[in-house]
Amino acid sequence: MEIPLLKTLLNNDTYLSSKSRLRKSIFSDDSAILYDLLSDAHNKYEKDITADDLYSIWLCNNPIATTSEINEFRDTVDLLKYSDPITPDVAVDVIESLWRREVGRDIANLGINMSEGDLGAMTRLQSLLERTKDGYMPDNFGEPTTDDIYELLAETSDENRWKFNIETLSRHVYGIGPSEFGIIFARPETGKSALAISLCAAPGGFAQQGAKILYLCNEEKSTRTKLRAIAACSGMTREQIADNPDLATSKYLSIKDRLIMKDIQEWDLDTINGYCEKIKPNLIVIDQADKVTISGTYNASHERIRELYRSLRELAKRHDCALLGISQASADAEGKTRIDFSMLEGSKTGKAAEADLIIGVAKYSTSEDDNPDHTRFLNVSKNKLSGYHGCVICNIEPEISRYVE
Image (cartoon, rainbow, N blue to C red; front, side):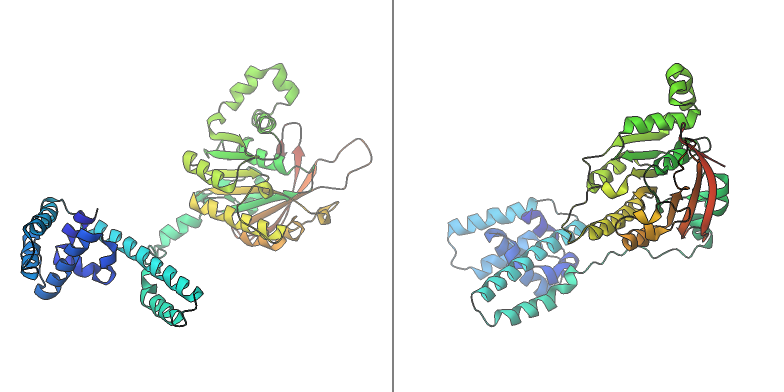
C-alpha cells in the first residue's frame, strides 16, 4: 500500500491537501526515504514530481553511495515508477487513518511517560491534543432538514401512516407511521397482546393495508400467537379452525406473506437490528418490549429500561418503520378504567419520554359471577401524532383476538 500511496503523493495538489497529516513515521524504512525526498521536492519546487526526479535528487544527496546502494535504491524507485497510484480521495482517507493511528501511539507513549513520573508529559499531551483535536471531530453532518413544505406535509401526513382498524380510535389517532414509536400497556389478562394482534391481522388491519409486519415474541410462544392472528383474520375460533382448517387457511392467505412471527427469547437488540436489516419491515411489534436483552452495565433496572426504550426508538428511525412495544402496567392500574403512562411498569419517565404514542388498555374490575365483561378502555395518555388525549371505549372478542366497536 505504501508505494501506490507515494505514487499518488507525487501529485502536488494531493500532497498539499494531506500535508498536515503526513508523517515520516507512517512509512517503513525504504518508503520513508522516498517520502523525505518527495516532501523536500514538493516544498522546494511546488509542482508535480516524478519518480526519476526523486532518483536524481537522491544521487545528488548521496555522492559517495556504493554501486550496491545505488542499484538497491534504483529498484525501489522503479517500484514507485511503475506502480499504479491510489485514487486521490482514497489516498486522503488512508493518510487520515494512518495519521490518527500515529497520534494514538503518541498519546499512549505520553501516558507511559506520565506513569513513569515525567512531569513535562502532561504539558506535551495537552499540546498534542490541542493540535490534533480537529482531525478527530466529525465533519460529515449530512444535509439539514428540508424547507420543502410539500415534503414536510407528506412526512407528517396521515396518508403516510398505517391506520388503526378501530374506527373510534382512528378518528382521534389515525394510526402510526415510519419512524414512530408507540407503546401498548395493560395489566395481565387484559388484552394487550390481543390488541396488537387485532391491529395487525383483523379485517382492515395493518397487514390488510399492505404493511409488512415483523411480530417478535419473547413471552408467549409465537405458534400460539400466530394461531390467534389466524383467528383474528378469519373470524373463526380455535375450535372452528380445527373443524375446518382449509377455510381458515384460505381466509388467512390474504395476509399470510405480510405477517412474519419469530420467537426471540434469546435475541438481543443487535440481533433484532440485523434481522430488520434483512427483511426490511414496515412495522415491528415486540411482545414484550421490556424483556429484550440490551448490552451494557446499569446500576438499576430502570436505567436499563430507559436505555432499551431509547434504543427501540432509534431502531424505528434507523429502519424507517413503525414500532409498537407491548409492556406491562404496574399494580397502580389494577381495577381502574382510566390509566396513564405514569402506571407503566419499570422506568415510567424513561419509557414515556421516548414514545410518540402510548395507549393503556383497561377494563372493569373482575366480577365475581361467571360473565366476564368484555368492555375495554383504550386510554391515550401520550400522543405526539395528533394531540388527542382521552379514552376510547370498545369491546374485545377474546375467542378470536379482535377488538370491535
